[in-house]
Image 1 (cartoon, rainbow, N blue to C red):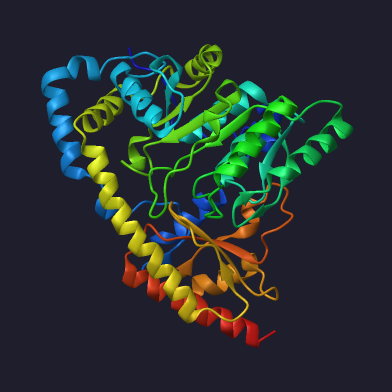
Image 2 (image 1 turned 180 degrees about the vertical axis):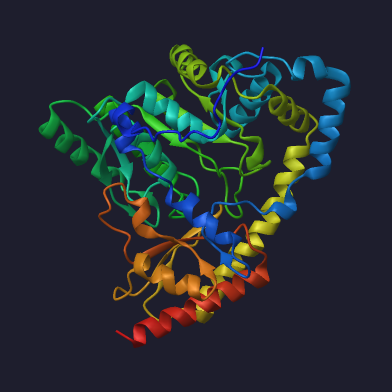
Length: 416
């Protein structure tokens, strides 16, 4: 039977806006994702994205894992799997994180589609329209984007070269209670190699944060995507070690294995696991089975540890190269953080320069970065700062990119 369909008729345009939820009005595009489009320009040196170096992706190890899995466990690896995640991978993560200081057991580990999904699930479980969350300022743009969609509001505390000024939390708490009559929902912190600031919170400040959270009866979201990428010093005890009953810890393979696998995880009190599973099932049922098998195979064979050692050496060199280039090429009055690890540093330029406006001059010079204002939830700072990524570009391009930025900054200052 043939359908009599007139494919030539004009299809009317539907006003979809009348059918969308109110939540859509609060959704924002990621400034970083938009800036990444610039990296397609030929000759542009990008310090904008949080990209790992593609030339270090463990292609051979992933290929070997894929072959083995398809041949020996293909039927299981291509099937639906538990919402909580692939059991051997959960066991590996629990064991490895326990050694790191995170109080994890397999039953309180949940696999997610990158840690970005974890942030979204937190918003879904905890945030009602108008609720406040306490964050550092600046803070991770992806968290802002995830929680604004749930109509969160942000009460921020400052930072210094040792990270969050935790003693400001109590005053922020009091302000929220006075305004709304209820408590903030949680504290969000990135203690290791902060994105975007590159700072690391010392042990004493972590302990103080735990004490304050306990006193105020607040949960803590401890976001730790870069913890394995330490280039100097010793690992510092995670916040969740001090208050495991009130901490949700987030990790990811995106910065160590590859971002394309989209594998992250949540460690939380077991009483919350069921709620996270329910929220996740409504999104995607479970994280991809096959990619979990790949990650488990690589981890169980000890290949991830060797790969991370290579990354540390390469990224340390790139960090040092950027720091040296900033010292050589940037104008007087500039300053920057010296990260102990991770992928970013936070650079401040002389105040006459607005980094959001200056970006067009930088792109004209063939360099991209992220203006600092995008990391301030209330857009109340960062106009004279920028986030610079040092992991993506090889050393010679880092030097050239910083040189170009320095020359453009000096010209801009002369024109003031």
